[in-house]
Length: 320
Ligand code: HEM
Ligand SMILES: *[C@@H]1O[C@H](CO)[C@@H](O)[C@H](O)[C@H]1NC(C)=O
Ligand SMILES: *[C@@H]1O[C@H](CO)[C@@H](O)[C@H](O)[C@H]1NC(C)=O
Ligand SMILES: *[C@@H]1O[C@H](CO)[C@@H](O)[C@H](O)[C@H]1NC(C)=O
Image (cartoon, rainbow, N blue to C red; front, side):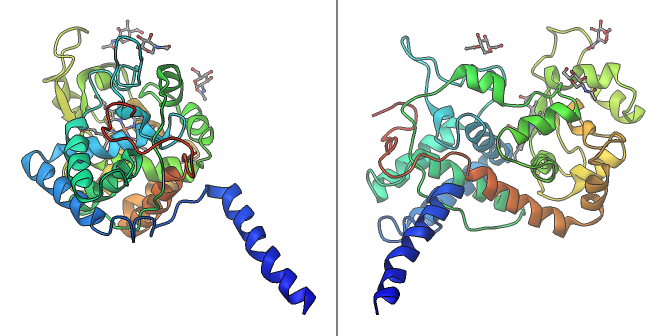
């Protein structure tokens, strides 16, 4: 009798501790009762944004990555700079580059109308990123929820935590490991570059100065990205030349053919430790998609604010 009741008391406590210490308390059913319409509300907004401009889905996926890598998935990237607040929008990796903020605003407005004060901007971003992948024909998954929004942001952390396209393989690996993500996660998540675009400044030195690049491919993009810095800096090229609006494994096939657009992309297939995984994904889209989903869920678990930490922002651009 005594031992049975002790078990009843101790076991849930122990389980709670275990879950709490590993990946906080995010759950897929977090808004089941408080906002049952959250998924259809967000999906409708994402689909309408992508219908207007296909690239927008890519931009939203990248926002989620740039949010999670800077002190966790807490919507810190969405905060606007003000005269007395420096946010992350002008950090090196985001300035003139991060986009999609208006889509998040539109989603948040719709969600606030349905369930005022309930759904965090951090969760809106997590769900919108998933819906974007699905909109491009990518895999679907249940998003873990219950994140709350930061009351702070850090431009310094954004500068130091978001990997740059100039990074070599070992720096890419340590950048992901600093977030608790593995080498396998690095390669799978880099498959996000199967959609979207990059600016000339991000790939100029690659197409003019590198030798591990297909000549025809380099010449093609040189035509739209002048050698001299300052001219054509914002001209765009697709990260996956073959199928830029389809979430498939062509990104990895491109790498095998030395057609990675960014220096960092080609680092994943350059005679190093990740070659085998790139090759496997290039031959097997199913495994890539399964690993991408697992890694997205892992990335979404980075340091969320839960319980009474943070807040549910009313407007994603500013703290309440
Ligand atoms: C592995 C390290 C990574 C590096 C160095 C990197 C770097 C970049 C750069 C330089 C761009 C182009 C930005 C511009 O020129 O304006 C870009 C675009 C993009 N990145 Fe990454 N990225 C990385 C990982 C990821 C991950 C993990 C994801 C998501 C899972 C992702 C999703 C995207 C998407 C979707 C775009 C296109 C955005 C658009 O068209 O607006 N990237 N990335
Ligand atoms: C972050 O990087 C940007 C662009 O390089 C720079 O202007 C800014 O001063 C940096 N911010 C901090 C806090 O280091
Ligand atoms: C990668 O880059 C870092 C920093 O620039 C450098 O210290 C390191 O030697 C490089 N590693 C390789 C294997 O090239
Ligand atoms: C190519 O490399 C040289 C030597 O490091 C450098 O001076 C030049 O600016 C680079 N060109 C481009 C387009 O990056």
